Every structure is written in C-alpha cells, then in structure tokens.
Length: 397
Image (spheres, rainbow, N blue to C red):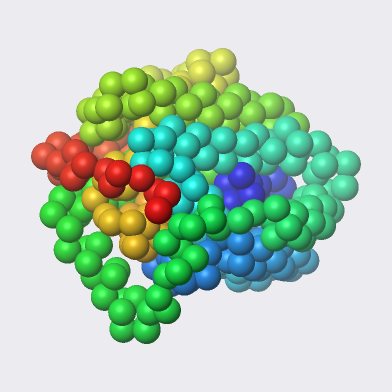
C-alpha cells in the first residue's frame, strides 16, 4: 500500500507542481519514470537482502528511506530536486510489496499462494486510493508541500509498527536455519532464476502488463483530466479515486478467477487482450465526454488487475530457496517496463503538445495507441509461455 501511494501521490497534484516549478509534460514523465528506474535497479539487490535478512528487517528500512524521499520531495525547489527525491523514494519502495509476498510464501502453503499474493498485490492498490481524494483534500488545505510533510510522519510511524508486529516465517521453517551465502552464491542464485526455461517470456509480459496501466493511473490521468476536461485538484482526485478503485476490484477479481480455474496464463492473456481493446477505443474515439473518459480509464485500471497474476505465475518457476530473488527478478521487469513506457509516452505527448500550453486531446490519443501496440507485442511473446513447473508441496518445513 505504501509503495503504490509513493508511486502515484504526485499525480493528483501534478498540475499544481507543473505550474509552481514551470515543469513541462516531458519533465513530468521523467519525474515519474525516475522512481520506477530506481526501484527496478534496486530489485535484485533487494531480493538478495530479503533472502538474507528477511521482511521484518528490510521493510522498516525501506519505509524510512521512502519517508526521507517524501520529505525531500516536499522541500524541492526545482525539477531536478524533485527527480532526486523520487529516486530516493524509488530505492526505499523497491521491495515493499515483494517483501509482503515473500513473507506469505514462507508462512502459507503453496496452494494458498495465488490467493494471498494476488490479494496483497490488489489491496496494495489501496495506496492508489489514498493518493486520490485524501491526498487532494490535504493538498487543498495545506498545499502539496504540506501534504508531503504529513506523508513523512505517517511513513515513519508505519516503519515502527511493521518492525513490532511482522515475523519472517513460522517456527521451524527453513528460513531460520538458512546458511549465510557469499556474494558469489547470492549472484549465482539470480543467474539460476534467469536460466529457468520460459522465464524470459514471462518477463516480457511483466515488462508491459502493469506498465501500460501504470502509465494511466500513475502518470497521465491527472494531466488528461486537467488539460482535456478542465478538472481542478479535488475533482481530479474524485475521478482518480474511481480509477484506483477499479484497479483493486480488478486485481481481486482476477485473483479469484485464477484460484477457481487454475489457468493463470490464460487469465493473463484474456486481461491483456481486453486492455488492448480499451486502449484502441480510447485512441480512436474522438471528443469523449468526461463520464465516458472516466469509465473507460477506470476499466483500463480494472482490467489491468490481471497483472497481479504475474507474481503467481512466476512462483511456479523457482524453488523455495530463491523466492526472494525470483519474485524480485520478475518484478524488476515490471518496474523497468513501467519506467520505459512512461518515458516513451512522455516523448510522444511532448512531441505533440505545444510548449507552455495545455496538452491537446490528440496527444493523449496517440499515447493510448502506443500502449495498445506495446501490449500486442507482449501478447505475441507470452502466448507460448509454459504454465511453469508444479508448485512445491508447501512453504512450511
């Protein structure tokens, strides 16, 4: 939840930041993708640290780093300082969600993993909800800088709470008797994951699946609602709330579909195909009203919930001792994908938008078309990805 909040909290106040600091659409894209690049670059080291030290130690450390980044963001006086703060938040938030999934893999049997991992991924989107109306309300009262000051206090309190209540694994689990690996052995574990047959096809889908939806919810929805439909801060927050709610509903829905059918790959293919259709409609439908646009963008978020199944599918590929590295390696593709897609769409929108003026609807339509094309490419590669080897008998030892 905290990780998703940090990724998207700036969206509802993005127009205010752009006006105050004179930032362009390209600068906004760089600001957003900087956090994803930092998180992606920290994924594999974070996975190694999760396997070595566990969730109870690593999650509070990451939360403190995120809180420091939020403080730097609220105090920034230029776009460069904002980007530096987002990098700080990206390093801090690198493995927050994955840490929870790793803990579940150690606490619960493998047959329960799909529901638990999907539930974590879906409910983590509550961070998106708090980054909409609540963030907009605080920003309307105290300004966007005051809102980030409140975020710092909350984050430090959450870090202390996690350290007090979280435990890494049940008594008697192999985690408590794990051998201390050397750096060479840790790196060899990552290479083991990358050599697993089929993992690269999964990573291609991971690159595009969540990133396409994140481009909307985590970057362009706010400017789109502001520049094309003229919404103010609070009104944008309300519209973004419904989009974020769609992500949660969709994530939980795809989780239960997967648990019911046991066909993870097929559910991912269906979800990605539906989002291709939605992006195509957004690209081709001219002069959309506010209600139509909000409904379609909310559906993009809801259907994009299929991306929570990436972790479920990946869990079938790697063994117990490599859980942290396996999950974080696949998530590395998720985050690099989000960063690259945001940079790509930033170039598209910037090239079609006049300087120092609202972004025109045609620029957003070109961006929607590009996202549809990238998902088609991902589907073509993922289509032959195996379901994976059978899951291990259980997480308890």
